[in-house]
Amino acid sequence: MSARILVVDDIQTNRRLLEARLSAEYFEVLQAADGQACLDVAARDHPDLILLDIMMPGLDGFETCRRLKSDPALRHIPVVMVTALDQRQDRIKGLEAGADEFLTKPVDDVALFARVRSLLRLKAVMDELRLRESTANQAADESGPLRGGKIVVAALDADGANRLAGKLSAPFSAVAHHEPLEALRAAAHADLAIVDLSSPRFDGLRLCARIRSDAATRQLPILGVVNSEDRPTMVRALDLGVNDVIYRPVDGGELSARARTLIRRKSYADALRDRLEESLEMAVIDPLTGLFNRRYVLSRLHQGIDALERSGEPVAVALIDIDHFKRINDGWGHPAGDRVLKGFSERLGKELRAIDIAGRFGGEEFLIIFAGADAANALDASERVRAAMAREPFLVAPNGESLQVTLSAGVAVAEPGDDVDDVLARADSALYEAKASGRNQVIAWRRKAA
Image (cartoon, rainbow, N blue to C red):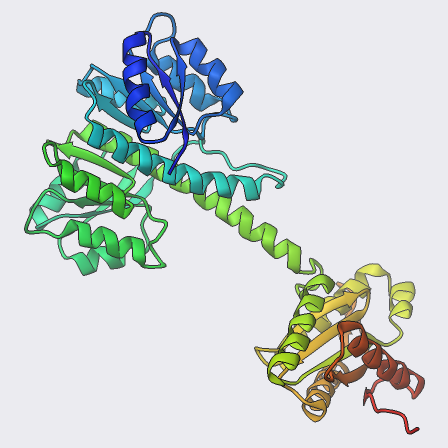
């Protein structure tokens, strides 16, 4: 995985050393000699990750990180603080400033590249979500207040799990588990999993792998607890998809700070995914009726015709029009017409099979695609829809006034060599015949005698 990395350090020798090590791994390296230069380069070149020294003249690393994370255009860039400081308060201060990780000088290559690649994988996913969400009216905010979170803590035994859970401060709600299967079940309803990877008698790595492979927990952040000298486990954990690690002995303040960062990031990612799903739904759903829109049903009809050509699987359609709909709008008003359209859509959904595709074709016209159906099957299904429409009046006013409404429909079956327009033309011809013959009926298209 190649990426652009910004190295920030006031000592040129340190910058060149990191540049050489990163370049050997095929990363593109940018440099900045102080905090303000870091902000300028980040705004101009948008690196994929920043390695930031703390002790610098002018803006120190803490203030530089705070400014990066307060800028909406830059806050999504992972920041790793590289420092000679290794005190508890410095780590917590950096994490609270928004840093994603701490590496202590002299930097170990194994730890450096494991952290860098883990954070770059995370950023790639987040960038994809942000790109797809960028057309939404409102952007999700990663920097909003944290309103708590449910945490599952998994360790070798109940005492160990409870000790870890007890180190977490408010506003978290932590539940301890020492049985992996119980922890996995609880993880499906959690915001974070903390897994002890420091005991050879508790296979925490396997639990992490199960969390990542299960669809219900795949997006759950994981914080691993490892022994400070156990580099292989740390690297293996990050390769498996563990989001962050903390070393023993575990400091409660640092544990809570890392938990806050991971839960806030999960909340942001969830918001992006929700907006993406909403955007995708809006692209295929008619907002008034909740049925598929014209573009989507036409694409599904095209697929049905392709299936007919490939395997001979039949496909039929019904083109439906609500009778005298203009009179409803003119006599009762457009809100009444909207109520009829919504009511019809609800009845329609109850009469169709799960594999049938129904959509609003335009105005008061609807199109149903019957996969695997011949003319007789499609005619029967369309007649059920017509009968359901005429069975009882539709509510057209808040005061309870109702109106009897009927529909007409034309049914057609796709034939080898057809395209979408051919099938729709035949269904429209049958619909015209149904209306001309008195409405409130379903007619199947028939080839005229020569």
